[in-house]
Every structure is written in structure tokens, then in C-alpha cells.
Amino acid sequence: MAGKVVLITGASRGIGAAVARKLASEGATPALVGLEPDELKKVAEDCGPDAGWWEADVTDLESLRTAVEAIAERYGRIDVVMANAGIAAPGFTRSMDPAVWERVLDVDLYGVWRTVHLTLPHLLESKGYLLLVSSLAAVVHIPGLASYNVAKAGVEAMGNTLRAELKHLGVDVGVAHMTFVDTDMVRGVDEHPVFGRVRTGIPLASRVYPLDFAVDKFVQGIKKRSRVVHVPGWIGPMKIFRSLIPHLVELGARFNVPKADRAALADIEARGAAESSRASGAGGRADSEKATRR
Image 1 (tube, rainbow, N blue to C red):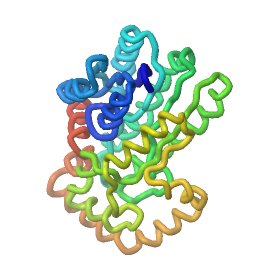
Image 2: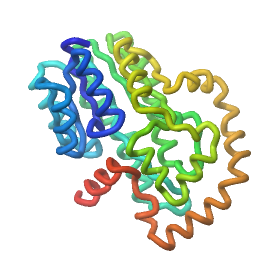
Image 3: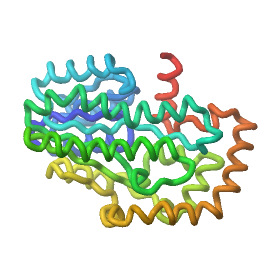
Image 4: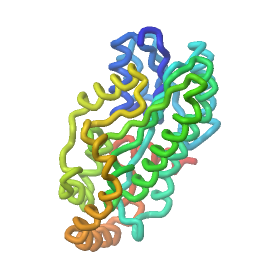
């Protein structure tokens, strides 16, 4: 990774920030893109004097274009892009705030597309590597996270398509699938009075993996220009049986969703739809504030 310029979106916190620090320790030059300038600055300082940061919103094409152009001008190249920016907002589709439902897709799916669109010319020039961050949610569709499930399934499809389209041009494409990892976003979901209990009641989703474990998998995948990154490894074999998974989810939902549905309606009655279904964690709050200002 020595000398490689790695552009990471959603780099203020969580996976993005931790991967940037790890790659910097191995000689890479992180170019950090995100919403929280104070946090971005801290991460950049941890990554050394060559690292840079740019405040940009992946839902705003011109904001993101300005950042990408500035990164290319500063470093003269972009070798790796990790399209990582994402939010999660818990809520049942019939009752959650429609604006929040759509915002998740705008960040998690269309934000990835905008990142690809703007950085691809630079990756074509460097014969680089593109890593799109999907999720176990693309395979296992947990009730109460419909917008997140839809977005991450779309990201997986985008990555699979791009891999075939770009291979002959020298650009490798990877898709990362991870289950619940110890980040601000996951902790925020767990703090929700209704949906935190829904997650912990589902066997495949009940365990939260350490951040360092996930970071090592991501960095290894980037260094190898892997077509997939699985955190943990059992997600790979699970994909083989994905046609059976919705039936298992539906079976389990019979026991916990009716109660959770009533609890969600009560929470909305008490706190309002926007607050009950707002994006989780500190990063989610930053995104909500950004969306409100626009």
C-alpha cells in the first residue's frame, strides 16, 4: 500500500476512520471524505502529515465533485476508493417517517453511485480498486430495517455489475458484506427503545463483532483487491442458501414482529415519527442535521 492514495467516504467515524488509520500505518495516503470536519481532522492527524480531509455530502453531487477534484489535484492520482458512507434508520415501513426512509437510500445507495461516478475516471487512469460497502442486510432482510436492506442489496448488485463491466479496463471491484460491528451506528440502533430488542432477538444478528476484527478484513481485502470481503467469513457460504433465508426470517418474524409493531406505533405516538425513525448514532445525527439545513 505504500504510496497508494485511498479515498474513503464516511471517514469521520467507525469502519471508515479505522480503515484509514490502519492503511496509513502500512504506508498508504488516506483522503478522507465525510460530514463532520472536527472528526475528519482528528482522523487525518492520526494518519500522518500526508493524509487530507474534505467535508462533503454524498447526497450532494457538486459537494462530492469538489472534494474528488481537490483530492486528485493534491495527490495527482486516486488508487483505491472505498465507498463507505452510510446511515441506518430503524422502523417498520408502514409507520416510519417517509423522508427518513428515502434519505437512507439517498446516502447508502445513490451516495455510492455518486462516488463511483465521480471517481471512476481516476481509477481507470490508475488501474485502481473500488470497494463498495454493502452488508449482511443485502442477504438477510431483517424486519425493521427495510430501507437499509434495500439500499445494501442495491449496492451489492451495483458492485457485481461493475466488476463485469470494468475488469477488461484494469479496475478491480470488491463488495464488502459485514454483520453487526461495534460502531456508533450499531450502538445507536441498539439504543432504540423498540428495534434494539428486535436485533438481539435474531440469532444471526445477535452478536456484535469487534471493530478491529472488521478492519483487518477490510484492509486485507483492499491489499488483495478482493472481489468480496466478508465480516465474518461465514457470510460467504450463507450466500449460497440465500433463496431459503427469507422463509426463515418470516418464520421468526411471526413471534417478534407483531409485538414490535405495536411498540413502534406507541413510540411514534410518544416521540413522533421523525424522532422514532431518525438515523442512528453520531454519524446519523450529523447526516440528519445536514439534511435539515439543505
